[in-house]
Amino acid sequence: MAMLTRRAALAMLGTAGGLIGLGYVVRTIVGDLRRNPMLNGTAHADGPAMMGVTGMDMSIYMKMFNRHNEIGRTVEDIPGGVRTTTESDSPELR
Image (tube, rainbow, N blue to C red; front, side, top):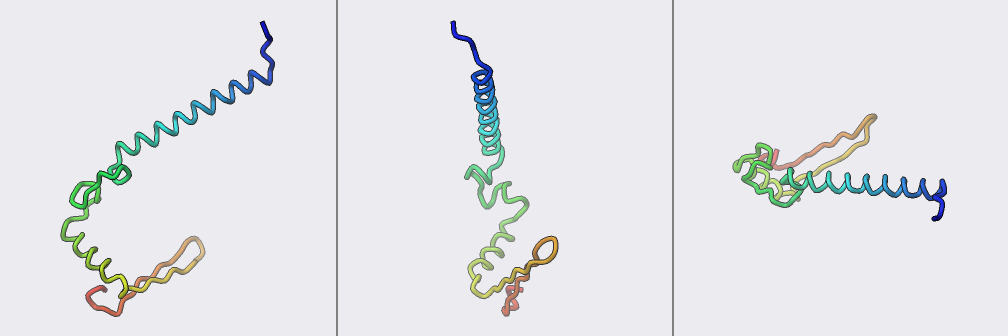
């Protein structure tokens, strides 16, 4: 019977640890997909996944998105983050 070298034992331990880690990552991803409808493709505009956005709010957002060419946005780097400014010449969009 062949002796198990230190190198072979460490390789087996490393492989086992890697497989356990991979299993944990896969389990976490699958669990997140089951729990979060925004990630698994089952979210609907009128469902709970919209986090409180009502149908009326959604229609306002849709009008805004349809008129996106009338909206300007600038992004400025500042210490500790960014500052965004959204502007429009249209009073209805403001």
